[in-house]
Length: 271
Image 1 (cartoon, rainbow, N blue to C red):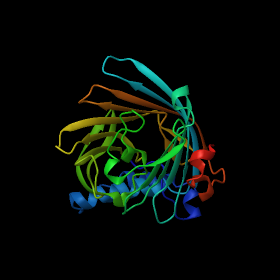
Image 2: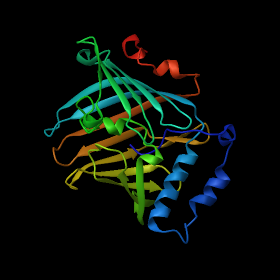
Image 3: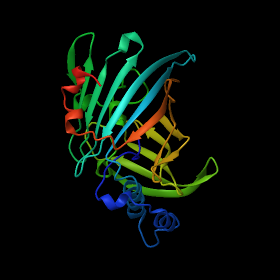
Image 4: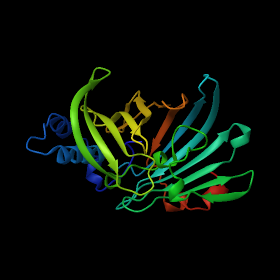
């Protein structure tokens, strides 16, 4: 997933900055190389989405096979911003019965391998996700484990490709290349809406550089007069014909979560 819920630095960034942001959105990045421009755009995306401290949200995951058959999972998720490192995330599955109580914990890092754990209540054990396995599917979905961690700026190198419209909205088109080991992708192409500086589309290319998946973001809303969040995300696997839809509801920010809410003990303790 592209950067839309991550780092924070100063409290003053919570103040309304719409005038400054609008001016920056019209900036043409004159004089920059494609690599410099790509990085500058991503850094602006990151800058605009800092200061929210913590977030909670209700989620629905719909899995579809090639024939269009669906299975539905209900989850809750929370995220903690971390200064100077990647964010921490916790996801708990509520339904259906066969996945109830399954919990996923992720401690993202900017320049070293992420720490990820999965609690399987049927086995009453915590499974650590090895770095070499992070390209595998998350809970049978079309999202990989590496897609489920915060996408820190330093996890990639970047190159601006072009500007073009997506669904009638002007966007920057950026190519990014994983800088971390064991990624399942050689590269990703990201469309960033020029007005709100949020990703609206991502194409994923596998280790053979074949187009593997496409992720699209829908229904962005502004929260706290600053932070944009999507209502829905659609991931389509072009090689298998499968797809996964994530729907997000009831975003809550700044509820006082801290590191204790993202300790490994939370996996068995629950919400």
